[in-house]
Structure formats: structure tokens, C-alpha cells
Length: 633
Image (tube, rainbow, N blue to C red):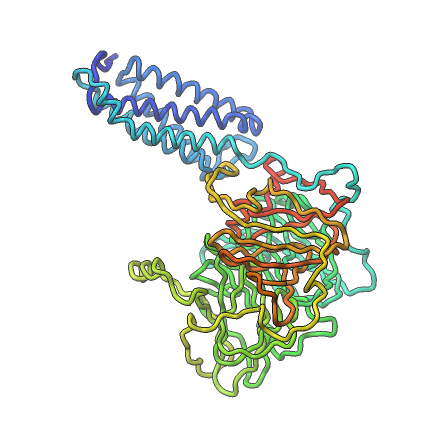
């Protein structure tokens, strides 16, 4: 066996030897860190990681003490094999394990580990081909040369190990059973069926091919089917899950019994593949709503699991001649409307009145900025927000209407005697950013404009500068009238501070998003009793937008930045809190249960900006975490 000359230190290749051993020890440390969860998940996997980690430690020491070409070549082959095995496990899956042939998710820890092993493989090959030559000792030079890389590798290893040692919790119950808690959320169902009309729907969640892409669909389409019911109807929706993972449906904005809310790990267990679940509730509130998955929401909603839900008034359809849903979805800068990538054309005749039910399901970028549609070609009234009517809304010219993700607005107008009407998207801040302009200049072919809506068959309206249009202000719109929650006294008052900080959470480095300095599941719940009047003072300490959504209840908007509302009462289930803004809202605790309160920017909620409103005497039998695989965000 040919050994590297002992008692020598080449200026470059000895550094290579040292770094190859250091990278191998870093990978071993990570493998030791991931062993416990793998032992719990599948014993052979855990045993495999123990063997690999021990072998890496012994071989790294052997490489430093008695280096040889054969050893370097063997370690190169071994490291390359580990990288290849990881790649197979993340693409097609392994033939053994708890879920054979199911690709595993990629996390920070395994990415860092494989990066270390890929680099070490290259160094092993170099050592096998070019063994060190004889040179005098220069330990100070070796130490100085290798110090930056040593610090980098040590830092990467520390981050990966820390991420593995702070994984997603195995089991969390936001309202466990305890003395005095005698009512389970599973029992908080609606009244038994009576004489009311029953609307029955079946929604099949399955992967489907749309425009050459595999998307997750409900009944084969994205968005899912529009569900229209009448106020007072009993709604029964059966979810059939043909996806490769569990899912649920949440009825966004509807005040329904807690057991029907559809939050995995809080109000139900997620529906496993191959099984079904029926939601049963009475549609008590007329208005514009929507539904979406509340299991791994950040991923499943953006893959296509959402749709519109319209509750028409008990007396029949609304007075307008045309009543259409306009569901915005996709990504900022490339918004689709009702599945269309370009123009959605809606039929409307001159003189007809039109109601457009706008729903923002666009998953925003990190800043959480809202979409800002503008109606062009006819004056319009904003008659409802989040499904609740505004009092005496006046007509407006072209106006930017900010909608945070999850928010809705009903816009009513009359078609002109000649020409068409369009709904287009503008920028919230009145102009495109320098980054957007740079991207448009460098990659003009990659710019895909957002879709827009066209109504009528006449000539297109003149397009004004949309970004210069005035911004809609709900706090000063419409006519003031009495609001029972406009002032105190309140039984419960709490300040909610929205913040962020760098850190490691759920096994990954994140810009952790916090409520009162804590990230879910460590945010203390808001404890209330049925019948109490609750006041929240929300303080946004970030430079981002946060549409804060409360399940099962309706907010009364009281003030923004300390200025009381002066127009129509505004009732919302999702209140948009702008950067460095304060917002005051109130609600009546009139729907017992354990309810989510979270930012509806999916990235922010997934990074921790979520808490619960807990009614006294109520507990949840469900848990979130890796054990139950209930992961609502």
C-alpha cells in the first residue's frame, strides 16, 4: 500500500488532507444528530446512520494518522455512494422504510450534510490522484490557510446539528383536556338536520394535469368548483382524498361550529389518502367566502386546493343582473383569475348592473403585500368587504382596492352604454420597485403579465396610470351608523405585537415570525368566555403586511394608527395590518371552541405567526406535530 510520506507537510495538499477529514467529521456529527428521530421512525434507518457516523469518525482519524491513496479512494467512493443514496431517497424514494417508494422531504440538515460530503468526495479524489510531496513542516502556514474554511465548515455543521436538534414538535395540543374543560371541540357541531334545504357537494382532491403541469385539484380543476348556496341552507360537503398525503378543507370567513372548521390538529385529524370526510354546517351569513386546505397550507393551497363559496341572501339572488366571482390566485406579478393566465372575459350587456365578488387567494412574497385591483370604464361601489355589507357606499372612479390574502370585496357597477369595462391589477405603492425594473430589463422574455378581467363586447376603456389611482380607505368610506362594538366597555383587552427575528425553527433556519415575541406553538392563547366583548390592539413591528385572520368570528374595525373609523362600520374576518401600523379591532366571543388566529401570508404563518383563541371549558382531543402528521400551516 502506498502511503503519503509521513513527517511532511505540503503547503496545499496537506490543507486538502486536513479539510477532507474535517468535512467527514462534520458529516458524521450531522449523522449522529439525525439518528434518534430515524430510530423512532424506522429502526433499520437509525442503525444505518449509527454505522455511517461511526465509520466516518474512524476513517477521518485514519486519514489524518495513516493517509494512503487506497484509503482516500475508498472514502471518495463511500461519500459518493451516500450522496447518491440521498438523491434517490429524495426523488423516487427507497424500496424499504415506513413509506416505500415515497420521496422524502428535503430539509436544511440533509442539504448541509450532502454539501459537506460532495466537497469531501472531490478532495478525496484529489488526494488519491495527487499524493502529497515532501516539504518541510510549516504548521503555521497550514493553520492559517485552512482557518477560514475550517470556520465555515464548523459553522455549517453547527447550524445543521442545531436545526436537527430543534425539529418540528412531535406532538402539540393547543387546548389539552384539564380540570374544568368538559367540552370537546369534536362535539361542537351544529344543530341536527331539520326542515332546511340541504345542499350536497362532493369534492375529490387528486393530482391532475393542467396545461402540461401536475397540480393538485378539486374535481379536476384549479380553482376548485364554485359552491353556491342560499343563506339558511344546510351545506354538506364530502371531501374524498385521492392525494398522496392527508388534507382538509377550511371554510374561510364562515361562522360555523368549531368541529366543522377544518384545521388539522385543532378541530379534526387530517383526512388520510384514500379516505373521505363530510363537513356539515348551516350557512348563516350571506356573502362572499372561499374554502381551502388547512393541512400544510403553505404548500397545499398553492398547489391548487381552494375554491369560491358564495352564500346568496335568503330572499334569493342579489339584485344585480350579473353576479360573478373573480378569484385571484397564483403569484405576485403573475396572477391568474379563475384559472385563466391572460384575459377572463365575462358577458355583460350595456345598462346591466354587475356584481364582481373579488377574492384574493394569491400567495404573496415575503413582504406580504396585497393585490390591488382597479376597475376601469365605469364608476363602482364597494358594497361589501369579507362578505359583510357596507352602509351607503358611494360611487368611485378608478381606485386601487388593496386586498390582503384571504380578503374579499364585492364591487357593483352599471355597464356603460358603449364600451367595455376592465378589472386590472396595479401596484400598491404606486410604482414598480428598482428590482422589478432591473429584472424586466435583464429578462424581458420571462415577464408574464398578470391576467385581467374584461366585461362586455365594446371598445376597451382608456387605461389611465393605474399606479397613480387613489387608494381605497375603508375607514372613511360610506356613511357612519351605529356599531355595538364601536366603543367599550370590553371584558377582555389584549395587545398583539407582530414581530420577526432570525432563528432556527422546525429544523430549519428561518426569519421566525412572532406574536408577542413567541412563535407558534409557544404563543400563549387568548383565553375568553362565551359572551365576552374582546378588544385587540394589533401592533405591527415589521416592515411587512400581515392580513390577520380569525376563524369563526367577525372583527369590527375600530381604528387604524389611533384614528377611529369615520365611515360605514367595517366587519372583517381578515384585517390587513400594514408595515409599522397599529389596528384596533373588537369581536364578540359568541362561537365556543378553539379557534385559529394567524397571519394569512402563508410564509409568515408557516414561520410561526399563529396563535389560538381558547374558550374556557373547551378542549381539543387533536394534536399537531410529526406523531399525528397534522400540520395545519
